[in-house]
Image (tube, rainbow, N blue to C red; front, side):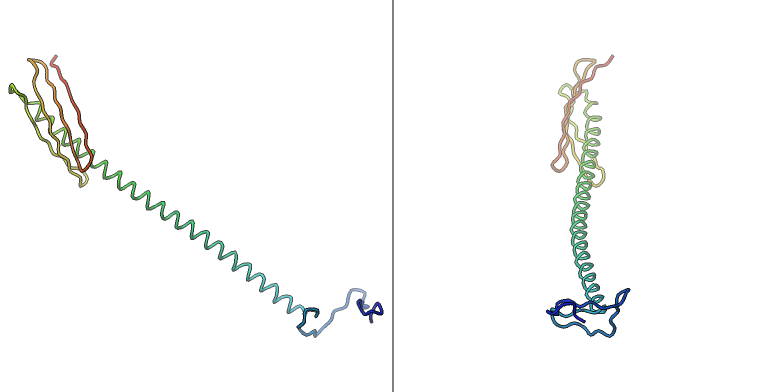
Length: 161
């Protein structure tokens, strides 16, 4: 049955190969393995590979998801800040308008001081201004508006035609 005297090689005689049946599981490093052992090894390797890739994918997705959540929160905060600032600017504009309407009606020799208030979107503002007629046909005004850390100022001139 061996091909050489050292018993290093054996060839089975079937023309299409020889199928060996009822082979027990190999136990030692130099034992042959049967199909059941090979299938079990393949299944274990496939399961290990799948678990490893799943863990990698899950960790990468979790990192991406955390980054996206942080980005969403940052964008949300910025929109809220922008909305608040828009409301402050709107309130300041309203306050300036109310002040300017009253400052422009001054006909006294020393001019007129006026105060205006405004509100928009839960934000409030106050403005103060001064208006004075200049001659029979001219006027000028100065004003400033304030709303929780925001401020604006302006001046205006007008002439009757």
